[in-house]
Structures are given as C-alpha cells and as structure tokens.
Length: 232
Image (tube, rainbow, N blue to C red):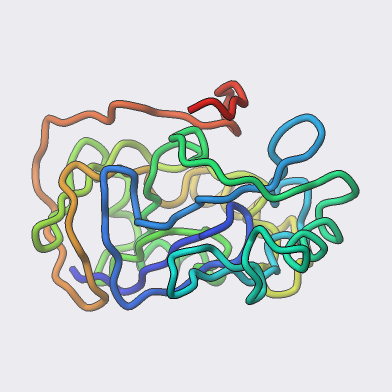
C-alpha cells in the first residue's frame, strides 16, 4: 500500500488544498481547518451552504489560510464567503478539536473510491491510500497505519452525510450519490482516524497496516453535538 493523495482544508467546508507532503501533528495535518464560517447561531458548513464547497482555499507562504487567493481575514474573503453562506456569516479562526467533525484525520482508500464510482473530492479526505481492495476498510478499525515515522490510528468507518451529494466543482446536488453510499456501503465510506505519532508523510510513501491498542483522547465535533464554544 502507498500514499496516493494528500489534502488539507485550511477553511472548513471550503475547497481542498492538494499537498505533495504533509506534516502530521497531534492535531492532524498542520494547517487543517484553522478557520471556519460562523453564522448567527453557530458554524455554517457545506451541509446547508453548498456554495461554500466550491470556494478555493489555500495556505500562504506565511502559513495564513487564503480564500480564493485572499487572506482569510480580508474584506475580499469576507465578501466571497458571505455571498455563499448568507448575510451575517463571517470567517473565524479557531484551533480547538471541535472543529473536526469526528477526529482530526479522514482516510479514504482507492478500492472503495473506485467502487463508489465518483470523485474522491466528494469524500473530503486528508489521505488516500492506494493499493487497497474495495472491501478492506471494514476490517481496519482498531488497527493503525504506519507511514515512515508517523502512526495513524483507525477508529471507525465514517457515516457519511449529505455533503457527498454535492459536486465540489459546481456546487450542484445529486442525491443519487448519497443514496448509493447508503445502499452499497451501508452509509459508511472512508475512515475516522487520528494521529498517534507525528511525522511528515509524502505522496508515494509506503503504508503498512499494524496493530495498536491506542484510542483517541477526543472524539466528536460541533457537527455531531459538541457545544459551540470559542473559548478553547
């Protein structure tokens, strides 16, 4: 097995930033989801604001997230996001673990993506592991992925939401995509993971499935019920 793809999402629910290598920290991919969109009653995501998914995001040379090339805290970025998320929405920086939906890494496998039959971008993973049979994900929870010096724990399969029905390039919705995940995968596709041991990983690097007795220290974010707080 090998690392077939790497991505981070500097702004939650905005576009993916492809990477050739990624530094894994105890908080996931360095620079991942450092900014989110907040509305009058809490965070806004692509689940209800589909247009956010089409907005490109990147990380500047200074490490600061960009929205369509503009610093996230600029008036230009604010205008772009408000046009898609609605009046009163704003960009906010936050580094607490609640910004991740379940855990701080999402891992997909090429065999399952091929069986899925749609682009990997709909799944919004951080890692794509290549050379994997289509049904292998079901047996991975409770084990770990060793990639160089890094070790990634595999917790559970990801129960997918309606975001998978949104084309990340056009923002158009196709509910048949979501129905396919429910009917063909029992609703679960890709893997909720976390960093056990930090390290730098690269596209093309070998991956080994190993045993572990580790469990994550924090599970669950705002989307699955954690209270929305900006104090952490």
